[in-house]
Image (tube, rainbow, N blue to C red; front, side, top):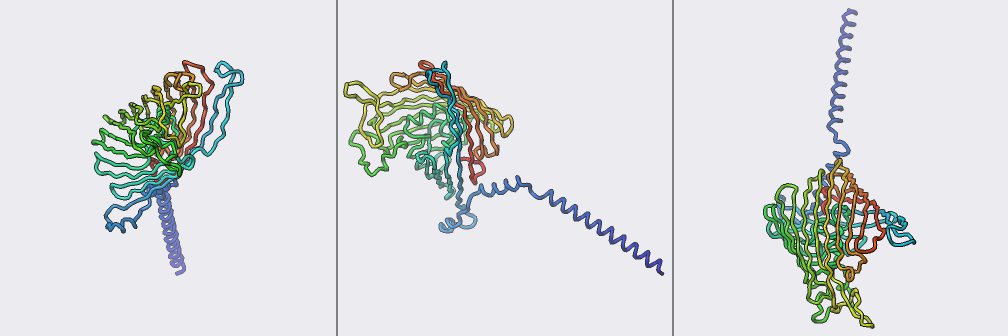
Length: 435
């Protein structure tokens, strides 16, 4: 009897032990599967970013407009960013201004270069608005509303970059990628009286089946001045021309997309600056791009424009160049200087995060007797590396290191090479980082 009881206890214990081990193994397997299925930190961050990219749902606007739950929901997207920059600039020694003399590098420490706040609001399926406030320089801030009537007709109103030079038109002052903003386009924007080509105006644009895009921008060409906000603003007298908010300047652009990754086109425009009366100065540009994202980048840019230099006569009867101040509406005599430049750029991604880039640019300053420069031709050789912390969002976090050699012809060659580092951080709930 005892033997049977012992045997029964033995098999019972064996069964319980075996079942317990199986249960433990099953639980371990479940835990293991759970660990495998648990998203990684990167996956969780991407998921959170994906949700953020949808923006804040502004349901109260939908309720105010009487929309139902299946209708469009207005959204608000927002962001903040900054750019830091460290520069080593070559400066002439006391022995002389030429490169043949000894020269040294002057160190400019990292500083809060540019900071900005950015918002996008989708108010309806056709109506949107955007504001970018630059904390470093308010004159390169923008604000506008946009209404999409049809793919062939979009209307944009406010202060922004409309049709214009392609090299400067698709980037921003806080995007310091050496691959984009060329010396030619930078000087053209200055000649048009607006940093970064931002103007007050109205822009009409559209596209035909993503093959052709057009834009026409009617603007004031005087966004670099604050005269029209002044309490002393009495406006110009009759015949004195642009006083800041008169839309007498325009730009028109045409862009073609014949095959994947290829884009070419051009722009033409006319600028009327305060002091020119009702006359204008012309500008033209053209480009050819091949951009294969995260692989190759080839760009050709060309630009030419008339730079306006105002003149006056001193007490000795000599003609001198003058710069009208912010409150000066007086009509001045002026001369035009022909400016011309072109650039070639090549870049390729060694890895998704590392992109070496090189660019050659030629710029002709025009007749040095009236251009204000002691030379006529400028050659710029630039080489650098872009490091993208997040390749799928290239503007989110980027470090750029570059060296630029400058060579002047037709005058003294000044020691003024550059070596620089820039650091860009953009915290924006649109993960594509498109501004």
